[in-house]
Length: 265
Ligand SMILES: [Fe+2]
Image 1 (cartoon, rainbow, N blue to C red):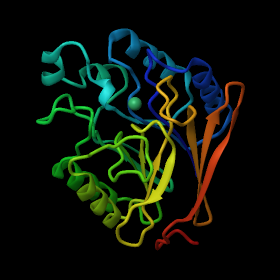
Image 2: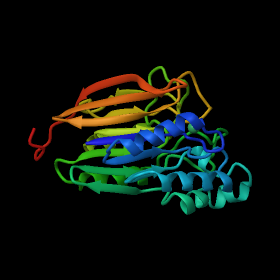
Image 3: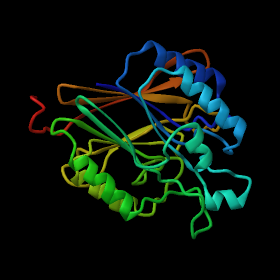
Image 4: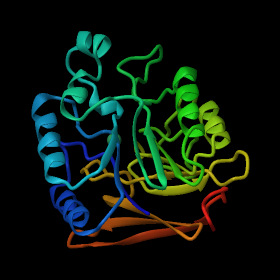
């Protein structure tokens, strides 16, 4: 099983050479699912979403995407409050509770971004109890041996040493319930820096994985994306980085996956 995990492209402020290299990689490398964890645009205007749409049409599939806080209109408060993800829905797809299933894989996406919140910093995340309960039930109903993957924009639990925070309301509650539902991977963006760490719940085998950015908005890490592979009960997460001339391996994490009835390992 191979997943490609790209995030925070911020069309309008994309790193064009890095994005071209990532796109070429996706075209040349067979994968089971491409996961996009939000901030596809910079200010969510029509030109940026047109660029997103053209890029998605160019890519091989299948693809599962979720919006980020930059994917709600930054101009026009009324739309931001009344229909924050209307533009995203038109160009990309359902902003919440979307999914993909194939033999051996169940992937779901939930929206942790909000058009507005009752706090000053609207860019931070939120996962409601209703979202958590719904997605946990979907994972509980997944095929017994399937790899369970959750995608959202904000890291549910803060990444150790990360360049910024997600401050996700309901994040720890969601993380605990996803672990209990047997979720193997929680894929996120937002930080613009790659990381992997085990969530501190249950058997410690639910892994939070963050991707870097493919934009010019670097925060101490080079632009890049993740290649996530599973084989024989082992998980390998490889952060690829654009060095200005070519892609190279930035970091590789190895970890065991939890065993399940039906996986034959
Ligand atoms: Fe971002």
